[in-house]
Image (cartoon, rainbow, N blue to C red; front, side, top):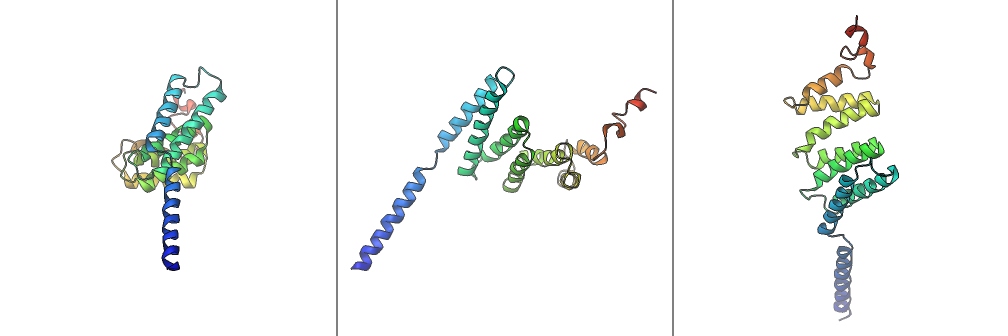
Length: 182
């Protein structure tokens, strides 16, 4: 008899715990509403009409909303879009290159067939090269790009990047002013 009561108490406790943990999860509708609100705020005031800290505050709220959605709904069809948008906004607003690369890698790992996966790999290589000057990692990412997307519209840009990886602009014929103006 005591076993039955104990078993019933454990079941009730477990169900209560599940209900409480689920009730703390923000609804998908609420998160997408927050995302839309913050996106609209940034579009209405794209940074040049307000104080930089105000824009950055809005951008940070949007990045946080994207990340909350990603964490709460990791398998949602919207998640790859929000991963990409969070990465781009983080780079553009805060120059947070390592966090951006992390988000882009997550997109590629969890959604390899998504249309943004190709551009994400390009941006990883480009960021390593041009922003972090980590040429070995840039070379790995860019070579991986060529292997996975040989027919991409970005292939010529990737080949150019690889050919001149780590070189100063005066070492690149297109940018060498001496060769252009003899």
